Length: 477
Image 1: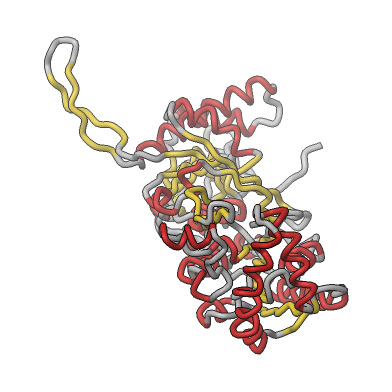
Image 2: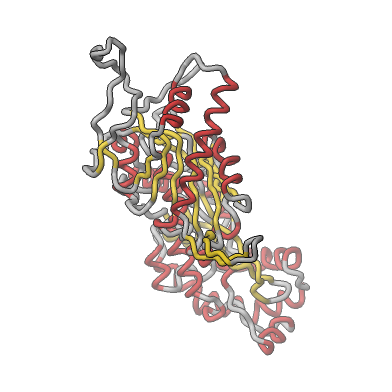
């Protein structure tokens, strides 16, 4: 399996958080006809298309029993028959990748003739290319393909390529390759593989196919262009959710009239917060810290100290939303006491880089054994979020383990909600439950982002230190 991430991946979901399908290309053809080369050529022809992946059907051979394994080592097992492949697992992997979900691709050893315990993690393809001799054979898999390609090559050329490949890559000898070709490969192509060409949208020659590759790549680019989404402005204008008034944020852009005491004051916003927002109690201590954070004249070391203090407060508050259970302990006095402990086995933090990283030290202090991951999400010139890298703890890459995991998603602020929405969508794509995601941030805008995040993912808890009437995007020299 191959994944290229030349460019940042834009939003693959709508403003409601619903994912859109990846574009799936199927490349079929005879053994050594040039399927992999065609797939890689398409991949190289899409340098500005983010996250293009190739999945080989060769990874989905069925596991062999002892008798079949002996036949395979004696070159007497037919690997070129349609029944040699596990179409159920192939279908599930292609279906999930098309739905933008993370999957584990099987690893097959052609030396051992067995499926290995190791799997390959794959996630996030905007364009998915599935190649193999029987990619167009199964009707269910054909229905998943947006573009179907059949690679046609002369039989002598396919034989020459197969001899060279199997000797170099699969540990075979010439005699065994020729015997297998005449007994299995050629009959299979004549009886099964060639018949699937009737399902192809385009037939591509196995060599000197530059024109065909260009036509295919241009078609894919047009399809992707028609699916592109731009969400930032829509998210920023998400209407307020009428639930709870924000009465404790003094940081307004315009001053109020003079108070009766003669002192100046700042306006209190009348916006509202949705019910999934957990705003820290606005104590005098926290208000003092938020004042320092907003002070443009504050010294650098004081600002860093203040950020650390607020981060510690929001992370401590976030742990309240983790599951807990009773725990019986024995005191030094010898008496028993029933307290509690965190009941989640798999907990991790995932920082939205780069600003989310400032909360990581506080997260580790709150939960010392916390595993950490990160998502590199950067805004383009128009402010649209782009996903560049996904680095998650190992247990989140397993669909079974991810389902029981709890995730603290960290970012320094929540403005339009564009980056937060993308971060939550990545976690959901990895099978993390929505109600197991806790978004932790220092500041949030009372407009736009919190309401957009609630509209899309109402079961995600948002823990925030302070709420401003608005957060504006500025470039600080």
